Image 1 (cartoon, rainbow, N blue to C red):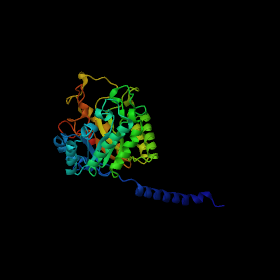
Image 2 (image 1 turned 90 degrees about the horizontal axis):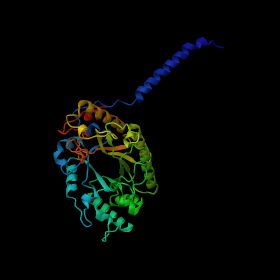
Image 3 (image 1 turned 180 degrees about the vertical axis):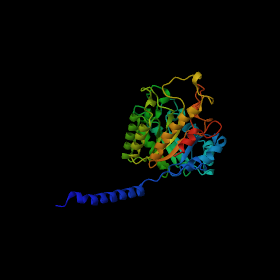
Image 4 (image 1 turned 135 degrees about the vertical axis):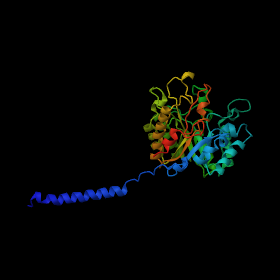
Length: 387
């Protein structure tokens, strides 16, 4: 038998050769680092290898915020101008002038357009659900009115609007369907009360018939709640199993500068991990995922605020800006990680001088976006584009 000690130099040489080979293969197959940030790139140009960057606009902001919209965003959505009450205020009246001006602005600036939203439980004119005697319409009558609305609206914008939020916010926080029996009147769904859950499938079918080339999305909020994102997954799987044409899920992503410290408050579960679970769950169905209404409120859920501690431009300090930037950063890190599934990220607004979060009756200001009240980039702007 050969002396084992005589074999050691040969074994050592083989191990060293194997190690060198492995290191060489590792260097060859390693993922290259992302390119450094080029300040000459606009926001959407910085994310060109990941996903389009959008903003929600209104009839005024396409003019007042064009200095930011034109260079930094390559997709827009109308905040309210394409909702039912805006486009179809009475049974035989469709009005498109304001929405058309938004679409024209998008075309002039080479922007995609997201249509928001065809069927929602809010901002629906009363006539939709009422017969001539004031009673609820029959299911067949409501279905016909839904079909007419969806068909005429999508046909009007066909070839100009490539993505539609067909149904918005049909699921409650606990995972149940939103019905006509919710405690708060503005949370009740007359669509469900009259048609039941089938209104969702029918809305998608009507939309697909009107424009077979459009991408059709289901859109909702609080996707970080496990019960809710599981229920959305199950609902969409059921629709897909029936052959209903659904192409994607919109996650609104109205977020806060920190999760709530109160376990009973919904935003206690507002974590990167929970939102990642939702993305992976939706993507497992083969659906696109889009972030549709992102902003980052300075106010934390479950805490009490009054005029004495409302934020102002003076109290929105560098330290608070840093906190907001870090919070934005971790979610954008998540979105880039899942760029294979995420096909668009849209902010709900353009700059802090025009945000729905500053329009409540309390009068409190909020500063939730990447650009400040003077249209200057904030710390959050630099954080999301630094990778």
